[in-house]
Length: 177
Image (cartoon, rainbow, N blue to C red; front, side, top):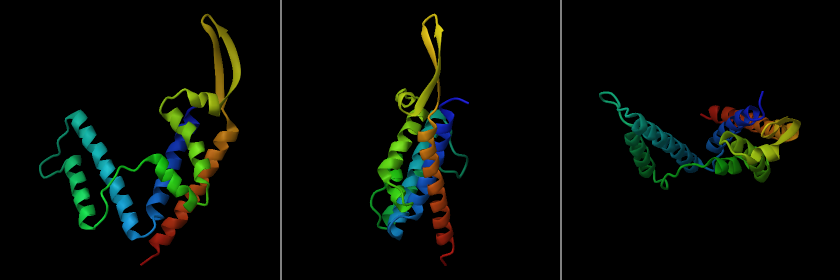
């Protein structure tokens, strides 16, 4: 296993758990509606981008991502909600962490190298990996990097905590009649 995959997999899990918490723990029904519609509108924006890139057109009676996005925005307006904005992963993490009893700065700091690895950045190798071996090559040295277990362990714990909180919030909301 490489030094990147555990980080990128945990990043995806953390962002998904945080998004669930962000949706379910919003302060008040209007805020939760706004968050859900903002997320849905962003999803349809991304769909529209894909449709444009691929030249895909919906079949007869179907609607494009752009059309769906306009419908979602109109629904938000009809509900008296503020204009929808694209949710940002770091903001979702920062707002979800306290709801799960976590320090938002610590969660964000743990998430950043995982996000850096996912985006192909170099700096996380220096901050969240450990060198284990070096082999001389014709061009210099090849350094073997491994996962820094102490940092990855914190990220895994944040994921577990958020998953448990998300489960609890989901069950609490599901039991409301």
